[in-house]
Length: 335
Image (tube, helix red, strand yellow):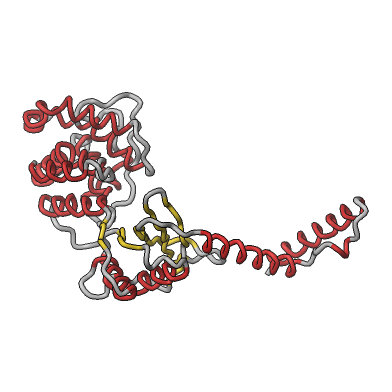
């Protein structure tokens, strides 16, 4: 209530200022709209006109792929978080964000309905031939998944293009679950122990994986190529800091770390955070002399890190490139 009153007072002050400015310019203040509600309605009308013009002018002639991805975001008018779905289309020479609607929930039905309504609003039913999505259960489940429901609503089949990064995440998650001890709760106990112990870790005295004879025996023949590949990826743009952190930790693991690499404190370790599995495993291993590990934990971390550095990294970082995708997939499977 107090905040609303302050806004009202501020707006009233601005209205007086504009009225005085209009008079100084020999204009009649009565000819200028200074009412708060009138300005708000005028803005709504103007935005609606612009929105309609954008939709009517968007008439691509090429087949389109419909993309969507859901995120929990802060609400615009409260401190709560809400489900929002970013929906866009792409094609040859075409990239268009359609909307980011708020969803009542994160179910497949809610997502399919939101995507279908936007396709209808933009009159793109005949142009949409493909769909791109992540591999969450709401999109790819057995019964009420968004992909199947969207096809039913459109009355036709679409070519399914699952996100290659998400497919790759399933691979490394399965390897992790095979090698590491199962965790009964939502968090990984080993990672939780390491985070709690982090304040006792000397970040300067880390060890590379190549100091382990079993690892060096396996990686020395490939070390130069792996280091060159990782350094090349470090020159590329990465949208998230943890992508870059994973590359830097891999260099340290391969014995090619440099003084400018800063080792960050461990972050979230929930099971759903797949990147945490890679970062935590490498980070724990390079500080293995300072952190107590069982023989099984040490062996599992060793095998997992070798898999990540030797086989997985190149495949994951090059996954978005469609031109090399077939060869990359074959190389991953061959290894």
